[in-house]
Length: 545
Figure 1 (cartoon, rainbow, N blue to C red):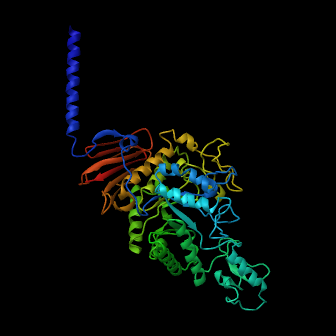
Figure 2 (figure 1 turned 90 degrees about the vertical axis):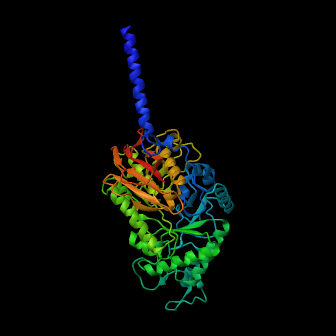
Figure 3 (figure 1 turned 45 degrees about the vertical axis):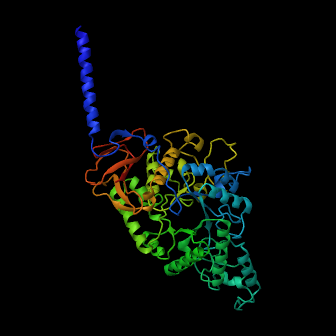
């Protein structure tokens, strides 16, 4: 009998506790989603992709030679890329940048023999047209890598100029009415740094990158006429824009000439197609990038945030604070916006000229690499991602290692696998191949897909303006608003440390709704009564009413 009473009393106490708990939950405050813990796979599952009809996109860089082989010769090609368009689209990308596809004797193709053709190793013009068509059917833009600083020494223009100079009697002055191609390059009789002797003549040509890459005379009206025709040809083929190689090398240290030439490119491209998009590679600091934006060019890659020693990597390694990361974003947006009101930022973390990001953090099990790329993807503008980063590929040192084959599988007989560039070292991977990662909820691949899902769901992430969120940021926390005139404002809070963190959001007067979370491990994010509990390396995204 006594035992029965004890059971009844315990049941009554349990019911009372449940009632108190339920009422506490009911009256937890005005914050939506007040609960103990949220995991990204649960909270984010109903996020819908926002419609995109502009150049604020998420772009996948493909090094064509190393991506996917379709014909068994071990070399990546256009049809290989076509076979992976569903994969690219499923990840959330809505644009692709293809490294050069023009004929060239090198594997990388950055020394063009012919601007109007496709290298036979990569396929045919029909293959390229089919690729563009199938990309557009999926809502994917295509950006052609356009190399204008130089051609190859095998280009017809240089061959014609070379033949003319070989036939020109010593001491005679060249006459462009006999050979207009002499004016296409920077020839001189005076040797100097960055110049190569044209063997068998008294002439030298500018070749700052390599003796086999003669530099074009971009001041020449004849050369500009050729460039106008090249732009028209490829826009006519359906490309949506151009990635401009080596912008900061166009005129060496002559910034004003570079600005004028970029303005020419932008105006010429838009006169052919008003929607023509340009993203320029200017490997320089923020001040010089700001100056180049006065040309009116759409985008310039944000190099200060990228690479092993960039702002993002420094922040993840604790060389910079979370507060400083937010400040740098705000300052960059203000700088570039002053120079060009309609600019579109081009954040990226790595590219084909940089060590892979998996090499940056010694002893990392994947969490730091995940967090760093999320920091880049949650910046404003058109975000660029280098192929293979979504699975944490390795590759460092010489360029060939950085361009190792996409790690589709560890099966050597996999027909998609490429052999990689000549003289590439053996590259050992820290993380499993794609086919293994797709089935692992904690893989880098799954994290990437989730980060891009969040980016695509909230237009303010790419189109908004960054504003520091009061005093919430500190050494290991980055907190900022993303304000938008046309879309819902956001508050984004990042825990940049491996250790858990608790943040009091009471200083924010606006109503907050926890709308998305990104967690690198098994622990979810908690939010209750304006207290945000974050596991190590995690991100919370709030909408603001």
